[in-house]
Length: 146
Image (cartoon, rainbow, N blue to C red; front, side, top):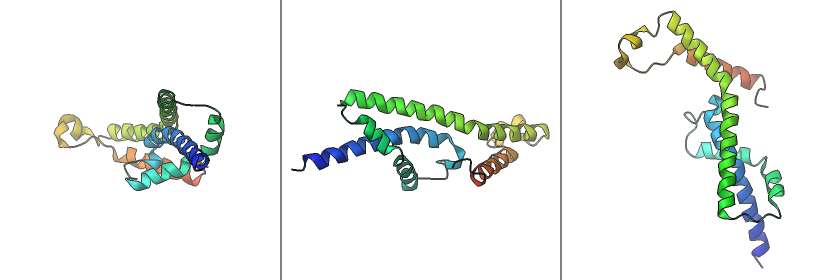
């Protein structure tokens, strides 16, 4: 009696998990969704909400297939690697502007204290961080994530 609804729910949960496996590494690398600012339940809620969009197509492609635990683990690993590669490609423009700002700070001598005495603190560049934040702002305002 309860077998058919339980099967549909379990297929939806598996499809949602596969969608989340691609999104977690991708959003981990993109600074606009940086998990340094988003913590805990909010991070999982954003990934879950974004994984709801590809879930019906993933579920439709999995219908009629029987997946054992080894196949499901391999599929989750493959999706995680694809998400990691997508995240690397999407995060490169932000890293580019951050490194340009770090280069400017290095050329004007703002990082010379950290080069002489590394115990002074972390080697962060204020201009690099600002350029990365400006790039995030311009991408969001310009519809870069739409």
